Length: 411
Ligand SMILES: [Cu+2]
Image (cartoon, rainbow, N blue to C red; front, side):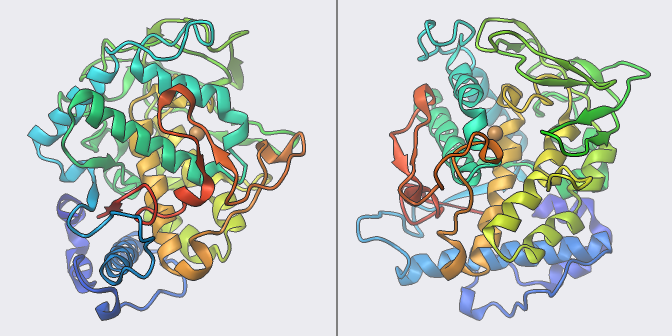
């Protein structure tokens, strides 16, 4: 939180007014705010407080062991910490980038009979997401599936590319304050995940259409073309498009998005979108207003028929470009994995506010908006990440960041 506090120093005093992490949950003098502040600095302060509280709850659970299974080896001493990219040193950023580049060079495990376009270990993750998209968005599995997916990506970086650092996430509210291109993830430097795409002027709106619901119109950004600098300037996107939304209400797709279709990574960084859908007020409002998992995950993905794409869509559409605007192929942009780190963090915070009722809360079925109708997702529903990695696991293993196979927290 150091740099965040620095970059938005004008409300440093309020940040300091909330308890710092590394304190016992019971000792946290924290009152859950009744609602999100409309003032961005105040909402940021609320969010910092909520995250500190969640950290305290996680820590206290590990100390007491009350939430742990006896077989679980997660303790305070091996608890890994996920941090915002801005808090990484130059060296730490480079280590992470090197590991991602390594994954993009390793051979794929996905047989070409399944996906001729899966050319690298990195592509295994993209291919799995493409194959399962309609079973993992607007379903009961959405949050847990992506938690497991991000975890296995983290594991691949460590086990196959010798990564030893912390896992990074993307703090959207910071981008909403300082602008996408000023965020160290997207500033285009050697220590970013590459920046904006080459500017393409006079682009039309992006029109998001789902089923028969009224569409949501989003402005296009300040880029649109291939990224021009940074570590992923020469990175080749191999898979897709499947349903790529283009400016001017157009859609691009391939008959088989798993076929090989090499092209550059495009971005269209869009401040308007991150400011509108994923600023601090929006994030805190999502956390505080959602009283059950149904409303939490629906609001997060954009309630259909509302004019919102939620914080989830907010992050994806603020990246823009190709494959950023393709719900199937979006993990083809390396920033996806920092975006979904933040998605997971927000879920972790929300769960921590009422662990008894929220830790195992699931709502939904196994099909996108339950079309075609399918059975309800339960704690016994199995999640299979295919060639991306990991064993087939029941949902119950994926509901906690410390009780089960995972052992991490967020700062
Ligand atoms: Cu997804």
